[in-house]
Amino acid sequence: MFKHLSDLQTLIDPARPPKKLVLAVSQDIFSLNALHKAFKAGFVQPILIGDREETFSIINEKGYDFDGVKFIDEKNPEKCVEIAVRMVNDGEADILMKGKVPTPVLLKGVLNKEWGLRTGQLLSHFAYFEVATYHKLIAVTDVAMNIAPNLKDKIGILNNSVKYLNTLGIEKPKVAVLGAIEMVNESMQATTDAALLSKMNQRDQIKNCLVDGPLAFDNAVSFESAHHKNIKSEVAGDTDLLLMPDIEVGNVLYKSLVFFANAKVASVILGASAPIVLTSRSDTEESKFNSILLAALA
Ligand code: COD
Image (cartoon, rainbow, N blue to C red; front, side, top):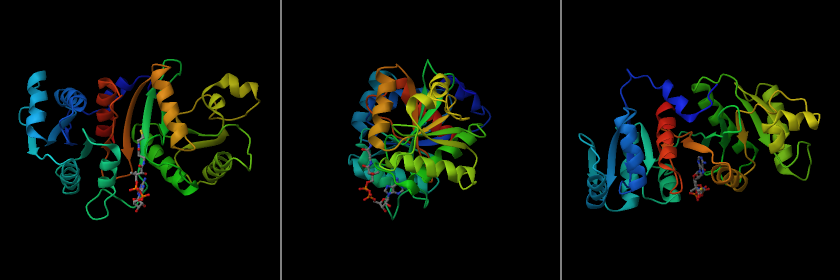
C-alpha cells in the first residue's frame, strides 16, 4: 500500500535502462525543470523537440546539463507534436510528454488516424493523489480527457486505470463509482451507470478489481460516513480508485484536492500505445516530476 507518491520511486528497477521520453514543444520552463530532475534521477532519457533558441535560453539560464540529449529544432507546435508522436510509433521514444502546447492540440495529434497512438482502446486520464487525510494514495479518473463518458466509455476508463494499478502491484483495487447519492435514482445517469458497473464486476465482466457504486463521495472515502448510512460495502472508506461521472465533476474534485486540501498529484494518459505525460501549467514542479515517474512505470 502506497501512502506517498515518492514511494512509487521504489518500483523503478535501478538496473533497467531509462525510458526514452520525447517532449513536444520543449520551450517550456516548467516541463524542463521536472524533466531535468527525472533525467538526473535516471528515470528517463529525454528527447527535446521545439524552438532551439527559446529552449536553450531556458536551459542555459537554469544551468541545466542536458548533455547527450537529442534535440530537434522545430518552431511549429503542430509539427512538433507530429514528429514526437511519430517517434513513439517508430519505437524511438517510449513516453510522450506535453510541453508548451495546448492540451487539445496534443490530444488531436495522439488521436490522429494516420500517425497517432491509437490502439483501438479508449484513451483516458489517470490522476494519482496523495492526500494527508486519507490512509493511502487514491486515484481519480477521468478528469481531463473524456468529456461526458457513456457506460461503454466508463468501462474503458475503468479498465485502463485498473490495469495500471495492477501494474503497480495493487492486485484488486477497490473502485468507487461516484454519484451524488448512494441509491439508484433512475433520473440520475451516474447512479444507474454505477449500478451496472458494479453488477458487471460481480459477474466478472470487469475483472481484477472490486467495484461498488453508486457511492457518494463521503461514503467512498470514509468508513464512518458509510457506517452512519448503514452501507455495507468492501469498497466504502477504503477506495483505491474514484470513477467520475464526467469531466466537470472530476476536474473540480482534482482542483479542490490540490487547492483546498493541499494534495500532491501525478497524472498520466493511459490506453494509447505509449503513456502520455499531460501536466497543466498550474501543476507544481514536484507534480510534473511525479507524473514522469508514473509514465515511466506504465
Ligand atoms: N479515446 C480513443 N479515441 C478517441 C477518444 C478517446 N478518449 N476521444 C476521441 N476519440 C476518437 C474518436 O473515436 C474519433 O475517431 C476521433 O478521436 C475524433 O473524435 P472527436 O471528434 O470526439 O474528438 P475531438 O478530436 O474533437 O476531441 C478529442 C479531445 C480529446 C481533444 C476532446 O475530447 C477534448 O477536448 N477533451 C478534453 C480535453 C481538455 O480540454 N482537457 C483539459 C481539461 S484540464
